[in-house]
Image (cartoon, rainbow, N blue to C red; front, side, top):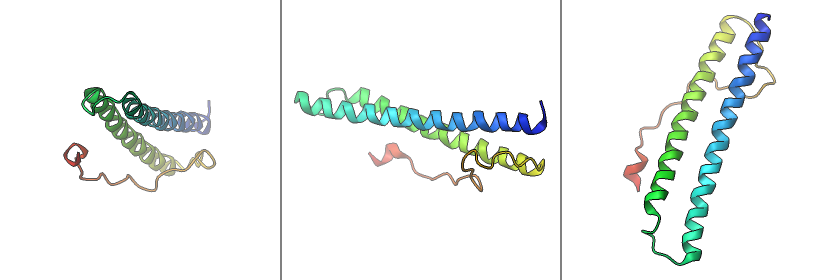
Amino acid sequence: MTKVEAATAVATKLLAAEDAVDTAMIRHTQLLEQMVEARKVLGVSATTGELAQVRVCDAIAALSEARRAVMAAHAALASVEKKMDLRVSAGLGDKPEEEPKRPNVDLRAVS
């Protein structure tokens, strides 16, 4: 396996990992939406299933952290790619220019 083939394999797996986290976030937000809709349809109080909804929100927050970590890994790998002058990620998807800034917000405090 050449250096370019190895780097391309890593880039392909990285993009698959990013996609998996995005898909998981979508599924969890759809689950939360369905839970709220079901509660309305069933005509039960907001406290019914509230703990389950909080747990789904916790999962979404954890997935957001996972996505941030994968994006940071992407940025770090882009730096390695540049240092090694491999240029394999062109056409494999967008890559961040720099590590995204982490917002200083506690979503639990907002609710």
